[in-house]
Amino acid sequence: MPMVNSGFSILSEDFAADPYPHFAWLRDQAPVHYEPAIDSYFLSRYQDVKRVLTNDQKFTTQTLQVRAEPVMRGRVLAQMAGAEHTAKRKIVVRAFTGRALQDQIRAIHANAAELIAPFLPRGRLERVSLMGSSVDRMCPSD
Image (cartoon, rainbow, N blue to C red; front, side, top):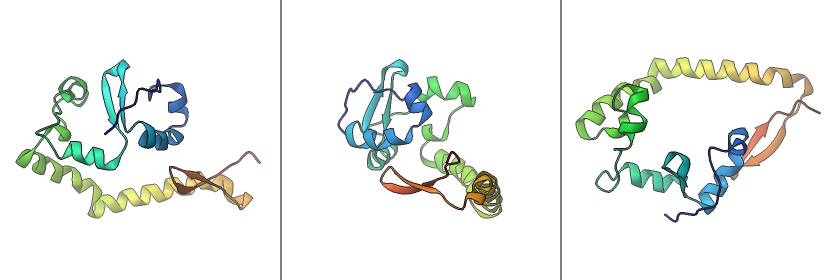
């Protein structure tokens, strides 16, 4: 996992305004990005994230005690392992299966319909490429 010090910051206004163009750059140029202002590392490649999350002998979640626990009022799933992790994960997974998932899908469809409604009279979308895949973007300013 090469690390690059580029002067780039995920805390910048530029990143906050439109993070998507930066993701490909991060994956290609800075897959391990260090953010000095918050003394944190960010991984942008799937395999690297998977490696870190599945190797608790090499990588620690100890810093989450300082960053996440005060916000979450206790340990977070990423800090747990073994039986504790499995038990808590089963609780979380329920929100993404069965009836709960169907409710979320209905909400997503309703939100999508609401977002696209203003563009339907125009009868077209602008197609752009982001992060190596095609994405439709609605442009109301023509």
